[in-house]
Image (cartoon, rainbow, N blue to C red; front, side, top):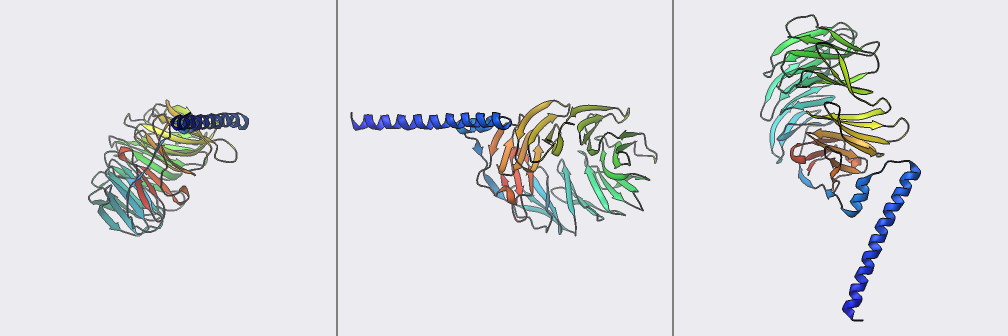
Length: 381
């Protein structure tokens, strides 16, 4: 036997060993799955044969806004709010806006390139875009929450007076006050303004559950009806371009007709508990957990009609998740994964900071994701 033949035989032997080890690993995983009762993770199996693409650091952004940093997507830039104020940085790392004001509990929301930064429990808010501060708002009482619609109209919810008295103020895209309404009872949680700027919905907590009160026309003090919900708690509301109001509860997702006050439950998950959610214009991502100890559960992506687009079983801790269009960025306890609309892995962690140091992630355009902690903020792709 020649040396070349011996070398070729040795290579085939190594290949056979590798293939054998791979199949043994797959068989061991399947056996473990059956014994433990866990769901199959087919991405893990295919990843042994066809390794997933690794995310890479695209840029590092330097935000100097103090403590409690939170972030928002402004399409071509990222906005940060912290204890010292706000800062906007383009995706190429260039600072384009900075505003100093003190916040004890910073919060920020954004929509279509415009953002509202506000101090929860304080009285100050700033509305801005990539280029300028559009307006400043000083509430008459502690700010509870804020919202913004695609047209740039925004609401500020605050507590004014004694007890549970709350006030919602509606401003147009130029920052002018258009409408203000006060509730005599029930603690205001949030509000939303419709796409056509003609309807306001206010979510408040009652002694029996949740209530959504509607105001049409924004030209009178009296309301146009309310939707009472005593089954469980409504966590969040958002108007859709259809005019219906999307409501996320602790057990379901509903669409509410703002005129007929009729609800249509499009997705029910009462057999599980909600761990987190994220909303884009067309999809809703849910983290649903089994009742019991641990992180076992699943990720579900549904469209706004309640159809399941993707479902993925997981038993790992979820640190943060963010949804942009139909790309879901998820920071788990052992790293970042990017998922498509079927919740199949697009890419997963490469050489990036560990999840232990991450407090926020933010899905950006073109599949980019911002990963941020107390001392760093990087964009990965």
